[in-house]
Length: 274
Image 1 (cartoon, one colour):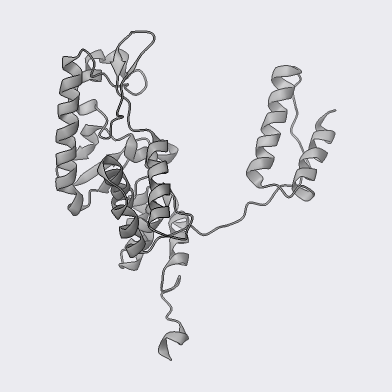
Image 2 (cartoon, one colour):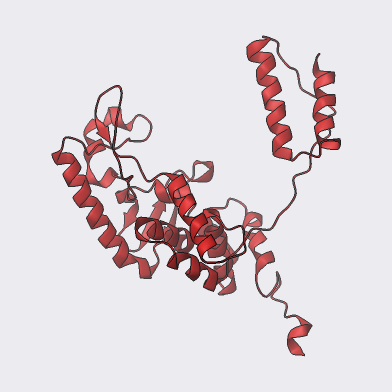
């Protein structure tokens, strides 16, 4: 079988199987991998494939009261992380990968290597400054204790560890939200501490949403959606929100105008005048 049969199979997935676009793309990638790596045959460009449609869905957004309800069910470091997702518009990975040096005293956070490999600056909520300072003091004490025990190392980006090997033990390079356990590198036998795992926060949010009795499919990313929507509700310029979110195209930010309580154009419903 060649390109023709593969194209027929992929079209059948869309037309008869009604699969999503991501499922169809995964099937196509698996077939190309199979031909290239197992059969050692080069698969040419597959023409005339009926593409599964990607539905345009509006983001799930929590109300301010719902955000408060979820945060009340969270505690400790996980509460601090989720509050930053909502208060700064960070993605979960951007937040967990923050280093101490990325959090500035003047109330700014530098999110490094976000989506598309871009850096950007966003703000620290004023209400989080003192809790964040107390948290970093605790993290610094933990790091000092790690160093005393012969550990205290952190993985550095790219080849920076070879360029500056001593930096992996410096306080500035430590993760702001460290994992509870250390691990030993198989090659150099050093003990490292990674950042808090994404699944720990995701699991905590899922449980908090359930305990708060919120009937929405809310995830960690929902707090970023809520951040953008609530800023627009407060009258902030869409270009400002675009910059804080790190969107390259303002059209990506404009999707939040469709979920505002007042409607995309700030229109007031005639039913509100009855």
